[in-house]
Length: 190
Image (cartoon, rainbow, N blue to C red; front, side):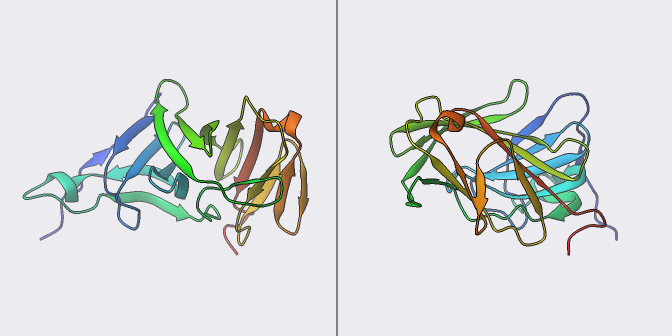
């Protein structure tokens, strides 16, 4: 007996679902973007856990028969260098971060409280490659911000700042709005 697949398709607009996804945290927001890039956002740890390219989700395990099992990704999963919430202070310190909500109109974005500072984090498909593009808006930024990532197996570029020892430091003026693009190298992960 072959298991039934109950796919959710993504067409012209992002699909955002609060579901439990196989291999992801319990408080997951699964996002399918038009064009076949998808990702899981952890609302508790405030981070993107992983992405996948291709079809979106099979919700059958959660909804069919007795349900309650994790949904399955339908594409090829890829790492995004997840280290938890990726922003640090100018001197590399972590601050407490709290999820404040999300917006689903247009490209999905997340509102976060980072030690009293408002952060708006938008996650989109990387342009012309397999990967994701993060846009961070910190309207009240008064000091430099660091972006930290595990770069193993991915290529990372940014719209501002300087990379040193795998850490991006973005000056205060540029921290008000900057992007970081994560892509798989041509030929896939190494």
